[in-house]
Image (cartoon, rainbow, N blue to C red; front, side, top):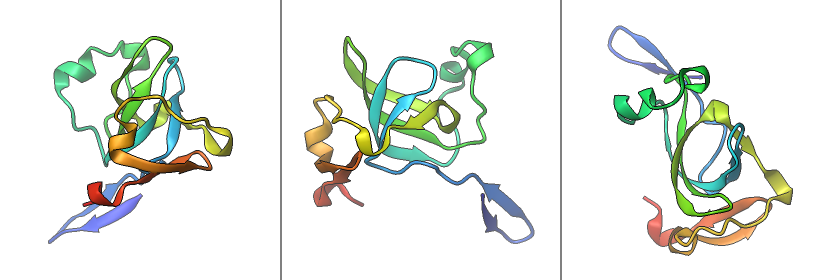
Length: 120
């Protein structure tokens, strides 16, 4: 946790366990992807969150990751809670999402290098 101090308050912000460019897979569902953005806590619509079955619905007070994701049938963008991600690590293979080359360059040790022109 990271503490952010305001005028009279201290807010604990969850720390992200994964970084941009890392290859991860979903803990429950059969897809994997590369992280291209991180929200420190849930930042999507209430409708999206409520559409997740209650028995697997994640907490909102944790980092959420934007992934260039793939499964056996397609490539897409996914929004996944930290509790539902697992790092693939050094043995990870490249992700086949068509947008990878627009955002990332070299791939090694289970991680993509962000292209300099897309860094902010």
